[in-house]
Image 1 (cartoon, rainbow, N blue to C red):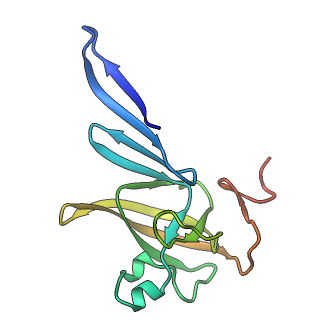
Image 2 (image 1 turned 180 degrees about the vertical axis):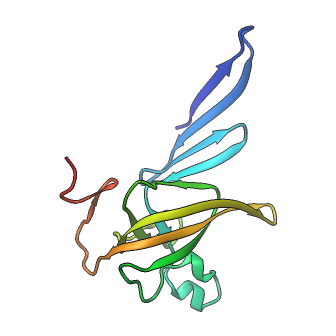
Length: 149
């Protein structure tokens, strides 16, 4: 399903088309004048084995020794927006939106978009608040379990 928004001039002609596309796992993609942006409620990185096998850069993977209080860099393909006002889940992805339960609670410290060889990327840094060692549910949307009012 694709929701289309049109803005109109006073003479009735459209000048700006926007598409809001719902994706899986609470993701939304917004296309504005040909610009595609994803809104991500979590940071999904690959397993470190992808880097060890030479398929991914280290910033695209969850660090092997993830520690609370530490800051790490990340790199994602495409133009992405993240929640910056509090903790979000760090999850592992296998690609095609195959996602794990949260591995940690993190705060995105910064996110920057750039172009390399005509491909848009998002890079940034995140700080680990808490590492989860169990398979329990730790988040309800953007909120840690038990903190939602």
